[in-house]
Length: 213
Image (cartoon, rainbow, N blue to C red; front, side, top):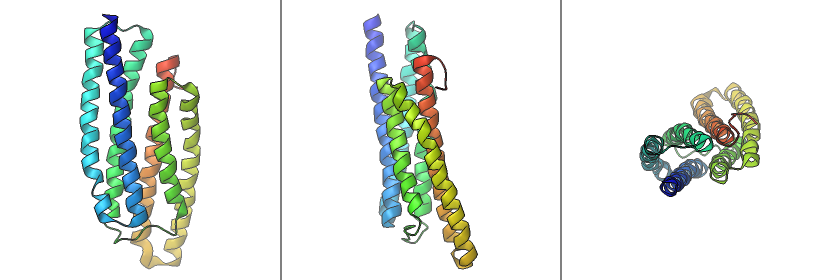
């Protein structure tokens, strides 16, 4: 019975890794679309978001089978519960990557080239998402804590972006719509960082029984 349980748990981890990879790809594509101004690249994000939604349903099904058909011990129960919480955040990451991509299609090939922080935010959030899922699979509290600490950096990038864009609007009112679009993109990246932080906190819960280090 335990062998079957361990096999299902391994499948759960595999599905989570794949879902995390899809999230990473969606954010990376959205970031690449912003850098290039490519509408075609931006339009590749929506199908990935649909795949992420399908993965969420698959993982939820595995978790429910583990809970209903097996008798998990305390640590296993925490791991399964954490996975159920994590996929909700991962699904929202997919949604927000698609939101970013949709805004990019209205930028008329402008790339935010004068706002270096927005590209740094994208790189930082991609790493946070990747590391948070790795922390779960490896059961690595140190990596989870590093993800949580990284959120302050993303928040700082967002604060600087906001100040810069407010200044842009003050100097060039005709750039108001463009500046607001960039601000929304930055806000979505900031939210992705928040979701990666949530995932890392659930990793800590799965290992220690507490959500904070």
